[in-house]
Image (cartoon, rainbow, N blue to C red; front, side, top):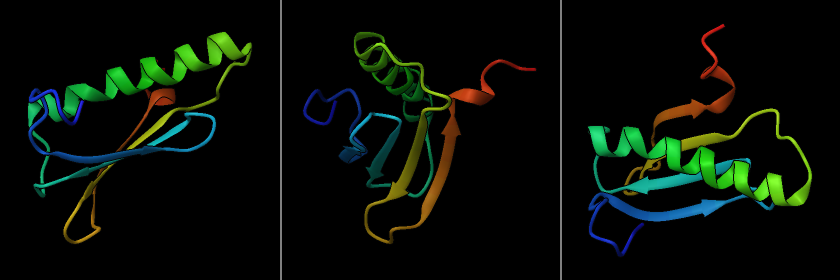
Length: 84
């Protein structure tokens, strides 16, 4: 995603060992529509990992952080997508 040119504000992406938490460092201090919609891709990546692993994650978290300041910009949870 970083080198694709589709996400120009993405500086670095890290994930924990079981792909239930992604930290995306951005060159900006706010999310645009493209960055906000990218959470669906991270939820999918985590879900596919768990499908092949035979497990069911309770939640997949995506944190957007300003690369320069370390400030948390936004945090999204897959568990909140159900609308219940």
